[in-house]
Image 1 (cartoon, rainbow, N blue to C red):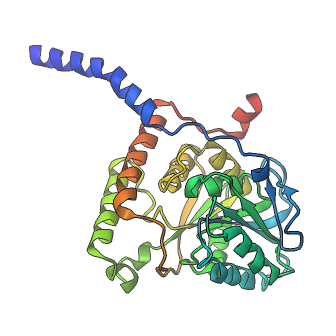
Image 2 (cartoon, one colour):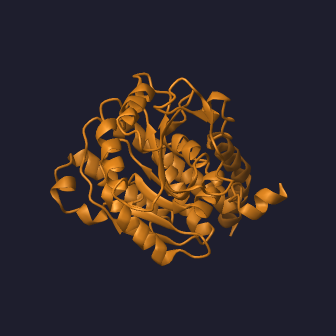
Length: 317
């Protein structure tokens, strides 16, 4: 009995320390966008900075494609070409492509404008961030300043087959409720194919460890959380991305946790995928950071430090 009491006292005494550690390790509030980050350029007027819209306004195109890009001069062109060539075959669907240059040092913005010049009929907008915001931050910036009724983010490497957006759109329509829904591109069906089997032992080991951690923290309801090919309705994107705290590699997981909290319908859709050389991810360094972020986001939502910013709450603020 005495041991139990002592243990309880120690536990209660450590709670403030645990809370302090959580506060210290949690990401700070995102910095406000600078004036130049709230503008975009086009190939038609590369020297002119045009004001970006806000996701809080109504949609004016059917689809927005958000492409985060950090030092992607080598890999960006095939991805943009594939996207434009597919989207141009779909009649009666307006679209825009936003390339979000995440403070690249290799001229990614100019490369994007040069690619866009080859497609004068495509609405390709290039935004350059003055400070690196990481992948999640770049995508968040693009989503919060796009015009689409549906919003897709797609990796700049083109690893996912772009035409599979049609499968995501179809499945999203099936589950959409009251303007809400998320379709998650998934590579889970490829787990026994050469695309995964031929990966290094270290990479597969980390992948399995990551999935185990997700299940342990209660966020394993989607088999592939990290595929960079996700589609949102505008209403869902507005609430999810306004609420997003994690801007590093675990941002996808927070989006799914938020979807669960807000009871937004989510469906996992198989997509074709192949590994593209030139990844910016150092797995040895990124894995412990992702693990830390997973624990932090679950803890913050569990104790109520973080709460979703719903449309209702934003109106009352």
